[in-house]
Length: 363
Image 1 (cartoon, rainbow, N blue to C red):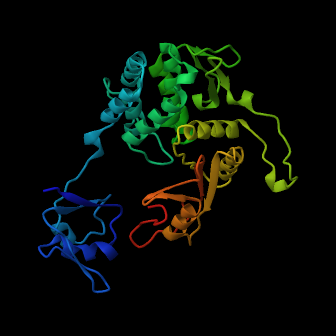
Image 2 (image 1 turned 180 degrees about the vertical axis):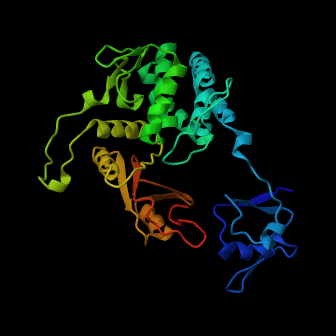
Image 3 (image 1 turned 45 degrees about the vertical axis):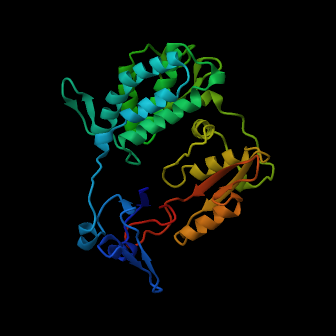
């Protein structure tokens, strides 16, 4: 027999999960509101529910399912790092990166997530405060994506000390990117202690064999991969150019913060990754994203902006995305030929949370 699985991945909602009880019991029969009945062909067809928790699951539902709890600590991030390392083409680079993962990854994740400063001497502090709580695996995935965006073949970064400089910068942004400012400063000091590389103050010629000092954190520094030097983002701020339309609302004065955020956005976008900006109102999240999108080449990039509100539904989001896509085959959609679609979702937090704790447009 060729077994088939129906996988339902998402939040449990009592409105629909109760209707599945008759499918999961001995009847194997789904009765729809319109009276139609669908029989589940058992044993060749089975159902799998992948859910975050069982808060809204009734005893009737739970008793009909076999339960498997998957603890993120059991899997860990090591299989992901092995897979990613094997995707790198040069064996020499793989070896250097493998040693860097061993040197930095576990101690830095333990420090950020668990607050373990020195495991051998049992020195434990409070876990660092994150603006968005993240799992170990999510932190490692961010690290690998940043490495993919910077360690590209055209840049020809082959020397171990050059690779380590890039690695330290990526660790700073991936593991420290979601930290609040005070925690970033803490993590920066810890990371530099783990690195044990020479520290040079601002104003000196800082090569890739050292780490820059003198500013709050490594987040204030850019790594020039062409010149093989560290440069402060404040030195990369372009001159202010008045907007062409002359409108006050169009005025954007570039700062070190906007340059830094644009660099990060551009790096992740170059490998077709997704970026989530998190911050209080008035911190220029929308402004930076909009400015970045306006610099894209319209001949190669299609843009879609979705402004969410409390009234936004999942249907609204689906229609907005489908409107800019073309149907290529029966079940394949894509942007116009030769173009890449970039979607900017503004105010992701705005859609109303339903009775069961789900934001449907996001879920």
